[in-house]
Image (tube, rainbow, N blue to C red; front, side, top):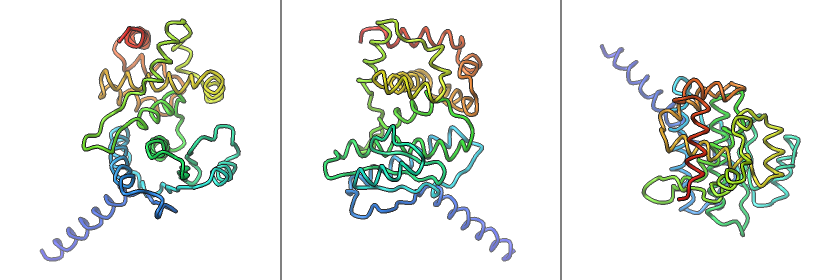
Length: 264
């Protein structure tokens, strides 16, 4: 009986350690670079995003301590680290490197705290998604749209809430008014096309991807999670929508245009 109790307690202890490890990202070179307010907000964000991606991948347990969260204080340092993955074309204020789970965010003396935190939330979303999905294909509109959606979460206050990105919504409303939005084509863009169109047309892909994710989450979060889960590893988003969205992709496009096209 005592032996069984001892084994049970050991098992519980190991499970507790494992659970704790899964909730703790490794922070590197962040000493004295984060304010107490930023540390609290990041802690809340980590827990929220970890729970979100556990809902998205309920069958897979990952150790988020694999993510190496690093803050750099100079743009040159950010660029040098970005060069290691072979490109500096799209450097902004942070990136995630899947090969070694390195998450890097720039924070200079002039960086507003809100901008720094939103970049952290965005890159954390890429990190969590990469850690869970592994080498599975992620449609670019979903990969970037979800990251933009999660970067707009507010963790600084007592209640966690999504802060709508009005700029991106106005961009999509304009595309609808100009009849320059073709969701059927956009949903299956590959990464080169997504990148080219986004950086030549005022963040086209990021705006539309964000609005797709936002609309799905607003309409029915459980159904959105079901759609997101089925997108992993799939080259055609259209097939997933036809399978899980009531009325299929054609109905989604109709409702999407009606939602963002109307005056609010």
